[in-house]
Length: 351
Image (spheres, helix red, strand yellow):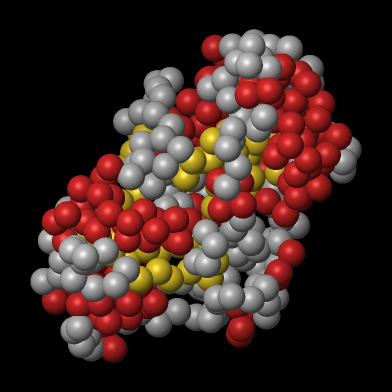
């Protein structure tokens, strides 16, 4: 095990996968530029050459179509989009082609394609470069959707995604790239479609994923002062969704808070609450609660953007209401505008 940053874990997964399988190729805008997509594609070009690691023109639909065709022929492409919004130009290829090819061929053809998408806020990028659109892709049968929250899962899930014979949308939150955890040096896989309980508690069940796991864990440290504990479920995969840890926890706590990474309506939080309500509506001690990004496009100015996103404070306020307790507001963290908008002080752009 080695203490490893999230972006380094992504880089290691790509390197080991390419070393193991000559059919793995890396393509996309910026994979060979000086910053190497936040460091996630470091040294790949130098090691494997331009036939397997290459930039593409700014033509996302064409890029995805080329990768789709290659995957059907046995290549295992990994496409990288430096922002999720760039992928919107390739919707037809992902949603109408890649997701359906296996089904329409009666299982005879496979699409082993991985599409990396970077999500989340930062640097005043505003409404067109700060979104988290994972629920859009999770809506589509035929796509697998992965959202790791830590470096260890990022490496294992990316390796599993590359080995998978189905198209996988792999979401990386920008605020996670510089977080660290202990990661095995070896080649290993983390199963897609398995959520995990990362904290044990008795008072409430909190379901979350991606960067919101970090904010949730911050809140739990503050709640220890009030002797409040929570089961925390990290979804890790949005499709297929593993509901068993959630159901098991709800049977114990009978209270639910879902912390969404994006807008909470029509999204992941809605799906989790629907699942729980269908099974336990009469046994719950409180109505389920969801929090997420405010229902508006993301503003560019930090003064407004700070009010848009769920964070440790909004999680604590929600738990206060659910458990009907009163916390000392001095325990709530105070963050500067820079702290709410800049995940990495060394990074100056462009993406």
